[in-house]
Amino acid sequence: MNNVEDFKDAIRAHSLIPPSVFTPGKLHRIDRADKPKEHKSGWCLLFNDCNGGVISDFSLDISETWQARNDRPLTPEEKQDFIRRTDESRRQAETARKEKSDQAAQEKRSDRDLAGNKRSQKNTLSEAL
Image 1 (cartoon, rainbow, N blue to C red):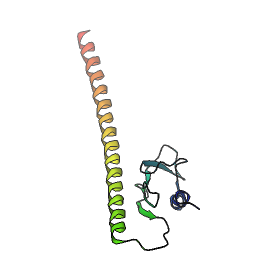
Image 2 (tube, helix red, strand yellow):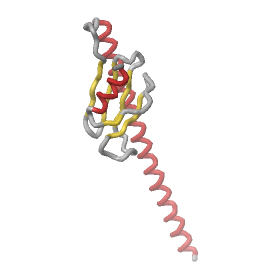
Image 3 (cartoon, helix red, strand yellow):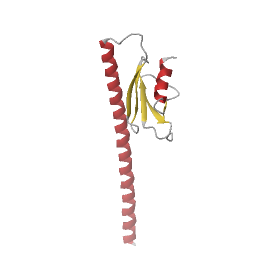
Image 4 (cartoon, helix red, strand yellow):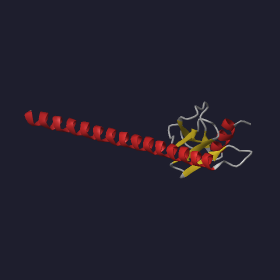
């Protein structure tokens, strides 16, 4: 088996659905097997070298680093690089989650403001009549 398939198996082990096409180095939003497709509280990132990655799901409180099986222990430099990439992936995902949350809050405020303006216009029109 290759590393991409091993990574997909690790994702499935958490009852998450891996993307059908992986782009190493790209953050992918993923679905839970037990939720509707639009749920997408999970994400994964396979590192560019396909030897490691991160799997996470906010709603399941999962945050796991994954590493391909290796015939030898990592050198100290390789360990540091793996930790650095893992931390960066988590920062990217947190930034994406925050941006999505902020956007949803802004849309809710806009909808509320629009509804308030319509009520105000209706009241003004009623008073004029």
